[in-house]
Image (tube, rainbow, N blue to C red; front, side, top):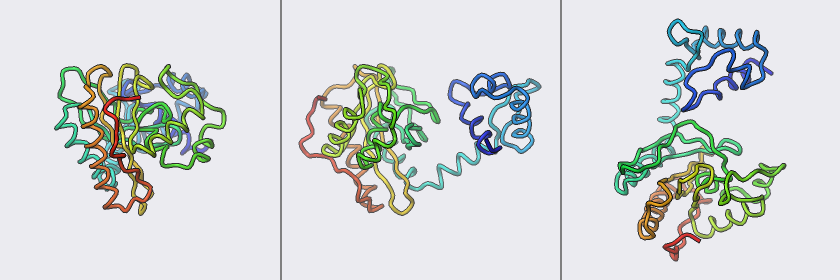
Length: 261
């Protein structure tokens, strides 16, 4: 393992529920020898990637990483365009909206717009969820050929809930439906009690792809509102696809049913 890969593993330990780490955390989470973990954390602190929490032996991401993260967001024009669309829809509809990217078999939210309803979904930037068991993930997976999707899951997967895809054939069937209808939908899958609607769009010039999503508590949306969300997401993504000349974009099927299957 190189120092860079080890440092990357440390950074992946941080999440919305783990804001700092200790040597003991790395031993537990990464199976790293205590002496190696101690040296690595000190080195990352000395190089500006981490900082200590006061006088404690806990380490958290540094200001440098925050600055780089902001640069990533603003340098990615596709994310900016998609975020503007989702922000407008979230403000109009009132439910939480976010933009996500796929990293291997995981989905990571990169921007979020908290809904204004009293009962709403809270989205954590940077957390990873399984691509196969989320509407954002399936919207992006649908852009891949079936053979490539199969290659991502050579050992299969374990469904996190009864409503998630059970196996690779179930997943591929759902991806075929997304290509036909132009949007993806999840209900009580990777995140329990949450329903979500998503579309995906890409920029051939950069190779970037993003999913635009609105999520909400599963029992709060009427069929007519669901249909409005789908159409607004689809229209916004279609405008972006026209600008980026995304030939892999799946337009909305005009005969979208008001109720989910």
